[in-house]
Length: 230
Image (cartoon, rainbow, N blue to C red; front, side, top):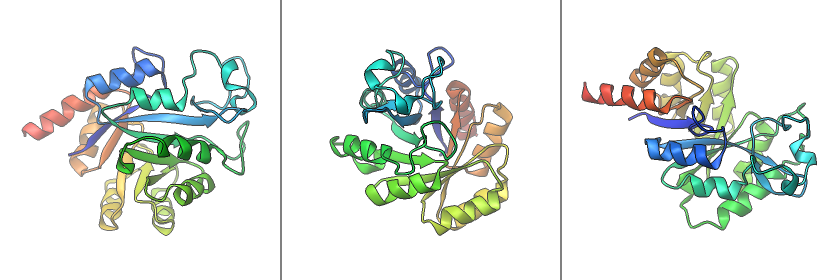
């Protein structure tokens, strides 16, 4: 059965990456929640997609207390995702404002996860940044890792396998069915992102992808039910 992952929570009616969006996605029946992790200037894990706030302040250069109520902490976000697995995407790309070559955000994440009673299988760490992901794999060896890609799927999958990541998260518009088959033949799980077109959701579910990350959880769940019903 293909898992349905809510991209930044249910942000069709709630602000993305918010406690309300995460809770609503769980209530709607999403199997997993995807969220974006960054590190504030004072070392607090916070959830925000962009490197900077709307007013231009860079999150990595701003104290957590000054980010405002719209930016929730990692701890609050994980609490709000109770009942679902969590795909924690670490945002730390080379060239973006606040990029940290030492990936200190990984230690922030590790401390938070290690204080929780949840089994490591509840978490999945992903990133576009290979170095950051390697740091996470080393620091949290029991937690699954996934390489996020938006380029040529054949070479991307080669990278996934060469680095021992059990999951691959390719962009919907680059992936081919043959890539899914090859990933599965090599023991790699596949989550396609961000798929919002109903016909493509149905195609990927029919192709056996392990998970679909989407902004439209309701439609994805309905398609899955239809496929299951035959």
